[in-house]
Image (cartoon, one colour):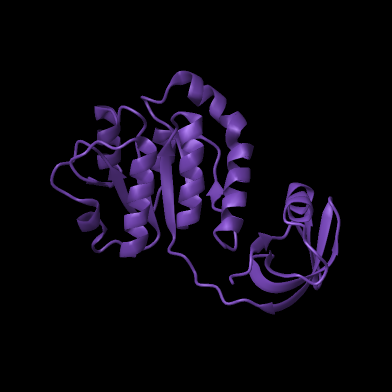
Length: 234
């Protein structure tokens, strides 16, 4: 059976600690016992770990050997802000798929009240990513950046860049990925898609436009499907 993985909240020598909600979940819900073993990520390195003490506010581990871990392809996602419940579901799934960074961006068709409220949700989004990372046995959650306008986000990009668009009819995502090198950047529009001005912005910045097919996908579906394709291809 695969050992459950946790990302340590604190590390001190050969000891690692889960604190707060992580400790409470392990102690109260999973009913952890002294002597049980888990994988614990300590300062970015997964280690074999044995529980030496447990309470509702702190679980202490003795760290052992390093656990082999395969590196993930470096894929970053530029995700236009849309309805928060669906956005948060997408963040969870993108974390499970292994993306390295997520940039929430404010597009022209992002609803104004969502754009205004997005900054206050970032810590919640980071918590969702942290929890999903542990479930997916990652060594670290993706970095979730503060929301920025699309123009600012696009201007600061480097690497292979692909923007998904329902207006593209000839270039598939799979063909766009041919010849791409890491890091790979993928951009996804909001409900209603990118505006003409935004298409021109991407083009002038050197992004390749690609399609996920003839059907129109919800924003969260497009992001998850495209990242799954990219991870498989890479």
